Length: 400
Ligand code: PLP
Image 1 (tube, protein in one colour):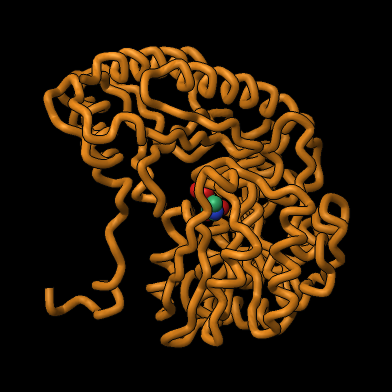
Image 2: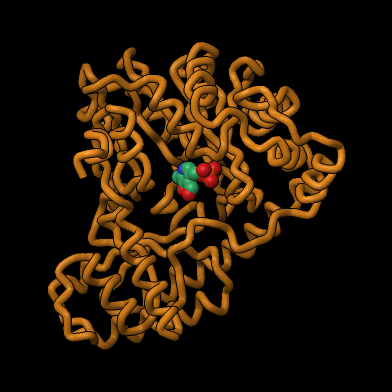
């Protein structure tokens, strides 16, 4: 449509939409569909957080706040960074938006000029490349496949950096692979960035608290303090506190960048919901007991899914360090005939046939820039998960 902007025409519609749409259609037709596509915890927001929000309403905290977060929340975020990440940020270096998504978007809008490149390890969270495009930049996907545990190698990063590189986006633990970088793996990457003085790091730590088997989480500016002036440390309450609907994300970074990001927000959405901000204060300052409780459940589910998928004909599923996703390979089934009769040429063919014949909705790896894989979210009831894995086993066993 000629009326729409050129910028928008460069942005792809969400590739995950097709599967979700097909899943809803089948559900409407009365089919028994198990959805493993959702990127949010199935747990409820903790009661102390809900109570804080109700109190905020009763106490009349229902007006505009400072554009990029009220002082009480910025202080809670600064305390969190100091306590959990050993990072000292002033409140002038903290910004709060309506979800981590807005914070990432603000940063890209505030910094990218036409032709500026952003290095994005693939597989990546679906929104990074399109956000870069919307902001006028050029996404540069760099393969980080199963041979390196879905992690970017120092050599691949070094080779991807050009004079036009502005940002490198790191996401650990990762959506979609669940892979998380150890201290030494991050240090190998930060050593490369230190040498390229024009490059900044946007680290998306949204899944920080979802790690298993005693994995120790680390973040870029903590591992390499010399990069703190070139790093935006992005985080939020959505995943760790089961608060996806409350829409609070935050970041710490150099004051000038943070100010520029607030300018973008001031002319678009203004402050995030005042009530959600009070809820986030309680999430960060209050008890953290639910995190271990939820993680014990997530870990059991991860182990169940990995084990059942590895027993399925033609699938290979590595054990990820964190998040609530697994990212198995379906390479062993490519070119083969599904029970539906269709020949599966790529991972989209695999997920379509799986949905049609067994009613299990997963997302194709090509949506995340690396196939032939698919993503399963195990943030769903354990019984449903087990049944879904049984169906996947049956499907794979019936491929000819
Ligand atoms: N970053 C990653 C890697 C995500 O998976 C998500 C949500 O799915 C976000 C950021 C955005 O989270 P929020 O709900 O805080 O906007």
